[in-house]
Length: 495
Image (cartoon, rainbow, N blue to C red; front, side, top):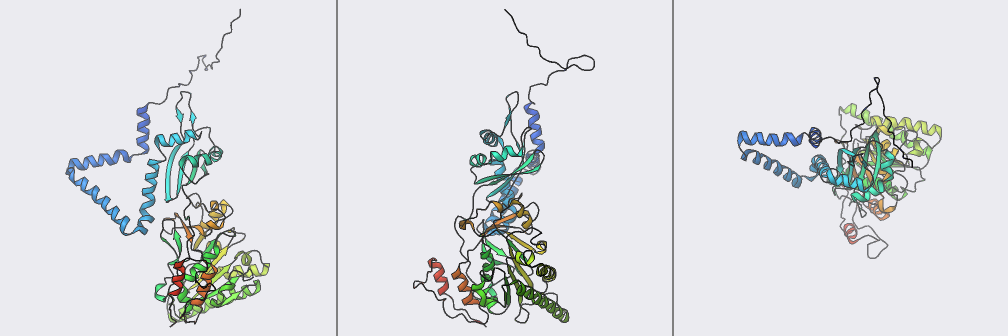
């Protein structure tokens, strides 16, 4: 009968001593608690501060101070939602979601169920640690996670659909930040379950603010305001993403100014005029061919130079809006045909003229609205000269940062994840001017009937005295009763 003996290999040191095996005991809980407190010092300082204040002034004073602070926040939330949602809500939301979703046993349990943890030899699970949570919008969380050793970005990418279901989210995407660290973009829900209707056209000039044109809604329910005067706007989006609504929406919002000659429209549509033909009576100039477009651009540039000379002669730095000095608005649909895909000589001249207008037109009230599908430098070499950029649904993740700036997608602007069907047309992102956080919006859908209404009410020099005619004897034309009532209310007046 033979017996076998296991021989454990040992490693000997320089002097022949046997090296000890690595201990399998885990770090003591007290040291892990101290490490956790070091990463979250407020859990020490805040209670200590409250106890010190209570000892110095009594318990009433700190209690009143805390109650007063909560009351101020509550009043701010109720009285002025736009500033609350802009400055405080993202911080409160980020803290709340970190402590209710992305920490402790709940977070560890979710990752364990999704097979995204690893066990040590002692049986203690190693859980990827959350470094930061940013909930800049109500529907998108950006969670920075340090992976455990042996994991890779693909580990999370493959399990992303399972993780989304476990978190009760609409979608989860992953992005590598640096070795061992990734970002989980958790899209909790898809906002805008219904189409946003076109905003009503204002009736009077004094109802229009070119610094805040109502063209849709944000995901918080607030109006989405577009700043046009003194800005240049670039709208990026693939075919069918809803760029047309962001072309006609601003024009509807400034209708009285167009009617009274306080805004003049210069329009270039190199799709043969198919997108803009319906609104042709509104336009001061209109070009549908490449050669005519270059001529129109040249005249627009010359108009800017004439305005600059007038301002120097009058000694003014800000141009007043009058019939003699209107806001000149250049609208370019399919900008790529002008800046990349046309005849080489036309492209070169167009880029030169556009660069001059984009760099000098602000003070002279010469504004450009451009619309393009692909925002690469090869296609839109002057894209960085546009001061406001909106990104609708795009075909590539890289297009998001090209349109909105570096890091925009990592901060939650998932424009490449927007579905391409009609139910999601007009949804996009813009960056907040101050916080640089992405804001998701949906532009109001502008139908052919809405364009006809705009032409009927805002053609320069006309007087709106009767409701817009309709072929439908009920006056609905596929719209609900509110639209019909809106049309019947018009009694506006040219001065």
